[in-house]
Image 1: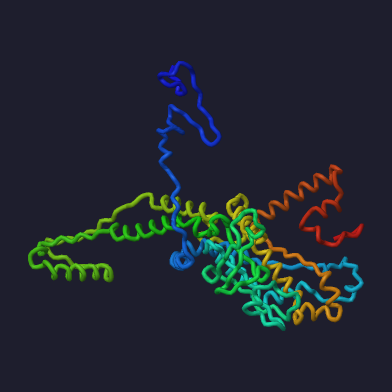
Image 2: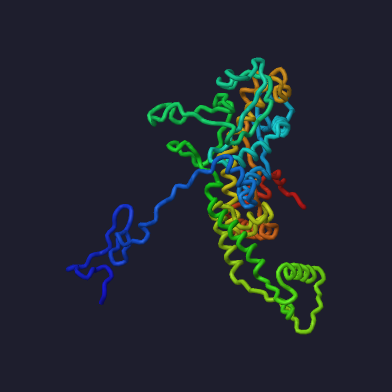
Length: 446
């Protein structure tokens, strides 16, 4: 019997050879000089410049959708701030008579500074440009914050946070003091905005997949650029094909005789206009008119495949790319759930840092609302102030699916209570619907 692992001239059986990075199979040619895949090599394409990236983002609707989806979804449901001063269990003597809600004061200041829109823009720029974006904090101080002063770290004593700006690539640059991996400055670039050096404490740099060796990152537009181009080329090809799918044929003995050249061209234009606008025409003896329509099969399947390719490259579900409703998921929609989990990681990994920077600056404002609310005790209380940014949920189950889950949870709790595994009070604490309610009074009736 023929054995694919034995060559014709071999005297003994020779199994597939395995090496560290690939497999070799002589009969099929895999991993040998006959391997057809050996001819494939990666092609390093030209990097999208900031100007070119912006043009493609403005030109193609699909590239705008890819960039904007994540940026807008990340801030769509917003966030809330919780401070230790708002908690009732805080027993600090200095806080007993403090009735103000600092979380609300900080949120009002954040809304006044339009931080939400700034974060959307910064996240959008990060997804467009390979060098990402900067979030730059502008403060007002007794010492003018200009030119040479901006090289120094942001002062601890300042009057007010004036603005938080999102700056796109092309308006800022980086310089690397040392390319020696053993140097302490290897990962500490110098930032320049319009040729003015800015200290790193005055900004946050948002960049994706940064390569220190190449000194550049990679934008989401880079990742799915080939897929977007293929989709756009296919759309253009179909639009040109539509003109050829319906052909009108007019037969007349006058064609070639009295109708020729310029007269024939003018007659056909009038005929087309009459058919398109009046949907009726008169024919003479010996004349005929017919329309032939070409059927093209498989177009939907082709576009589904192309859209799926864009979805895989951008990590955004097809339904979201097509403008599906945001936030409500049915059971089994794991692709949407995975997408929202990715957006949640973008919130914590990318946006938490600039948000915490902004809150810290708001708290330290000498002429700000937080110090005003704390009054004469501000200097002693501000060092004790702690906060946490909590993002609101990005999605929720549909009402029907939520009811089914609540029903199954109630049935499970009932079985556990009847079996003596837990008490009704314990089951109530474990149920998210009732855990935040006040404890039931023994003997209560409803």
